[in-house]
Length: 606
Image (cartoon, rainbow, N blue to C red; front, side, top):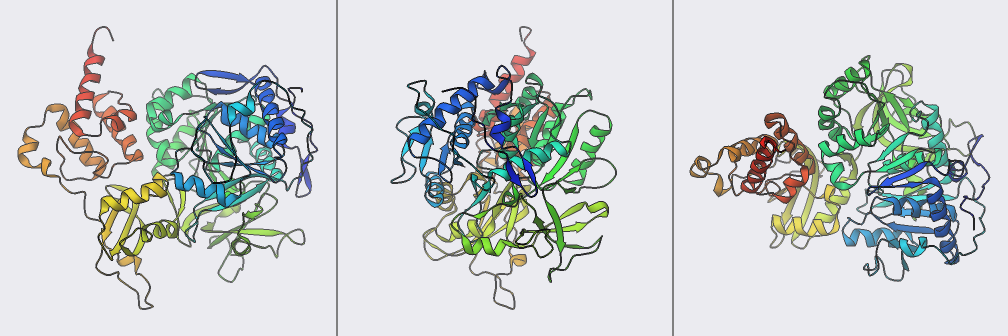
């Protein structure tokens, strides 16, 4: 078996043929670095050979076009090889983040009808009954070689299934074809976003989110993928160091994570060959202005990307500059935007309406959900070809001059929180399913411990506690979907139509002042504990904290932990790793750790 990926006919999207991703990947120089992970670099030659072995063994198991292979693997070189090997076999991949709760992982595998699950290690508990499991090491191990005959694939052949939060209470799988994925790469190049020949791209997103597709497709044009582990992703100092050490040319990042990174990324204001691909949530005017100033000085360039999973990741792009306030730009070449009012009439420039997207990168639909597919993927009466479809995004936008769009918010129960797209009805369904809960409602508020967060309101029909609710939800929902606060109500406020009046739901109470935070305890704080207590109070919005209080029990989460270390760095000039906050959640322990860091920094041998 050769180490060269098989030739495939170019897939066709719309009226223009685009080469299949693997056809382009086969052209990358064999000695160029393809993947950097865990301190090791793998060449394109090594990657292609490994992917071919995986493809051969998958084919021997009956995997081929329209088969779905669940990849339950962490970000790393093995994930990349398994992904490319799956596509080489003509099949589609289903990303299943190993960090998701077991029940969530099982649901994804079963709902997608996966034919095979690929895991990292032997002895991994089965994700779903009756679905065979195999380790990536077994698929990729050298010899004995199995004959592999490339199978024909077409533009509409399934490339991947990625799940998004569901408005019906169940996550829904979005099906994307190979031509759409191939066209995405071509359009990023055509729009001047992916321009650096042999660029170095940071894979920053979880493989379970569609932003990861935008990152791995860059591999297929010969760019190097630099895998970013969870510890580095969560720590601005480590991420800034990686950007420099790996000479990244492209980094996909959310606004919430970009803000603290900029302080460390450009301390001297010098230019760097870096493009920030920012997206996942709205960019604030303040961050937009800051990024625009850096762009004007030539320090870095930033493009604001918008797009739903249903339309192959990115639909619009807008360069961040000082000419205007925040906007999401205009459509990438493979899609057409339509801004329509409630009667589906086009709105005039300056008007607002719901955004619809049409074109060949619109996905196939929701896996196993024909009714929901018909509801969201609707006929495009204004399309260029008979039978065209458009996707109803549910996003409200304003039409700006030149076809640019300003994002206004959602028209339904979907929200964005720290870069994650989620449906409030899904979270509500999980809360309502907890024994002892009679009724539930979930809203996104800006005033949860000093930051945006989910608040779950519930009416009890039996014994139920906040700790019990949190424990139950953590077992079934991803961490970003677990509410930050819970409010018990005797009855829900309702509108004149008898529906829950969400606007009348009360704000959550401020973080409680623990018994340890009384005046006597505060008087006993050491200097470092006093400093940490002040930072905690500012970050968490807590009126007072004491030495035995726990950061996460007071409402802290990953984004607030990042803000915490940024404040410590600004006030003390000490680099406090984010992982230290997780390892030392109690105030007195974190203060002691900080004392150690300060002493080490002051040591003449440091």
